[in-house]
Image (cartoon, rainbow, N blue to C red; front, side, top):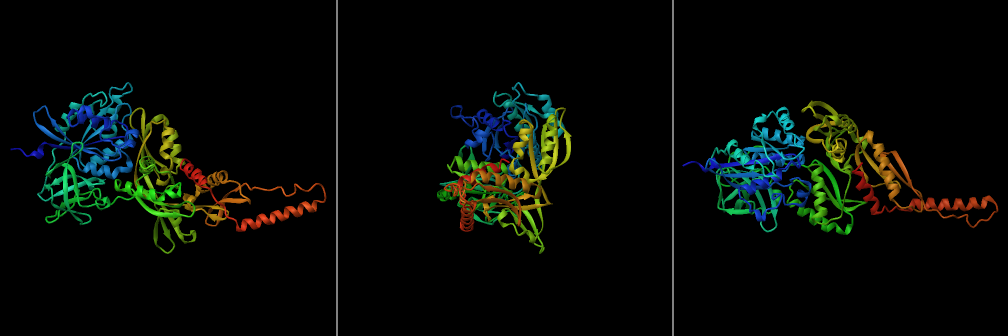
Length: 602
């Protein structure tokens, strides 16, 4: 009797944003009759409105399908859907680790994109079998020959291996499913001790943490005591099962199978993505490789626009963190903005998604401060301090030098936009390392630049320069020494912490002028002249004055000696001076909104 593990196939779909990954998953579900036609809706596995709108996958969704091949065998196919964006590359790597193969989807009209390459490199590193697929072949703009050339030139995959499908028009789906069972190898097991990889987890209000697992060795049963390898925490299995695509309970999960486990653990932060589950009593000697602690790359303050909403924001951020273990948040307070949270994100898209979800799903009116990255500040006493918030930057006299995080980026674009991209890279303090011709019409530029420069608006500007045809992917590339300074904004001599930022010394003057000009327009006229200044250390580098309200004290003087008018003006001047000494400038909330909302667009 043959081993049932030989009829299991575990695979994922990797693709650039909007290349048809979710549509292809839909077709698989319909062809294998996993979901009925009457309850079908587009993008079945994307259950967030944001995912459907933006054409992106934010959370991975596994599903088990049963497929009868032409050779008469019945196969169990586990599709592990993966997020597509660079911000979620660690989650993608864990999802890939749970598979033996990957379907590489390429849009026949757009060709190979930067993120496609990054995810393929991850799949090759995991030694997965790759099935290249050209999707959207029915489009009038489809250029199949260009895509096949790019496949050979960029990814070194023979063109003969590529399959041609259209998920929307339902073309070539059966052939692709046959290719999955023929080309992708069956799972293997090496020992009887339980080893299961946690490749994702979600929080259920009624059940607690639901862990998505792939069992590599051994068997996972109901009511067993299990242990998390990284923390050593033990727990009892309350329920386990598989996705079909809804959760369906079963008695056990065998080696090679993919499913879910619900334990007595209630906090999602106790179960880390990439961790290994094993039996408590008979634990495995080594964890599954690739686990690492995930850490935020970009930091920003989130504050409620109405301070009365703080408690609601606190509650909603806690709820959001339950389903997003990579989102980091801790309370902080600002003199100007009141109570809020210092939040850490995996990258710019992750920050955008969290912000959008807080606004949409939880109906919060929020304000984000100027984004920052983690700088390494080396002090004169020989120590090193990591700073992600400008408020904690040491005094300039104590600093020996500062290092900023760098990235290595690959940009793929039509050749005609090369000049504009080069100018954009130089404008963002980047260095072009090399250029490669992808085919006759496309070029790939490899460059190195500071992470801080792409956090603000690089991606938007790249899309503008390339008219939407450019794509980018990046990876961290160490730290580099740079002339970074803390820029403070002073209003009437007092520092406003909400506007403080860490910037490159060459950009400090331009940023200081921009913020001062915006504040001058946003702060209403005062009874005395108010100076808005940009300062580095004790040095003022930019200044604007808020217009003062002034009463005409000499209106009652008709003719007469000039000394009488002078006396009245001097008296007014003295009063204004005294008022300035004891007066406070109340910066209205609208001013913060105006400056902070527009600062991330400049």
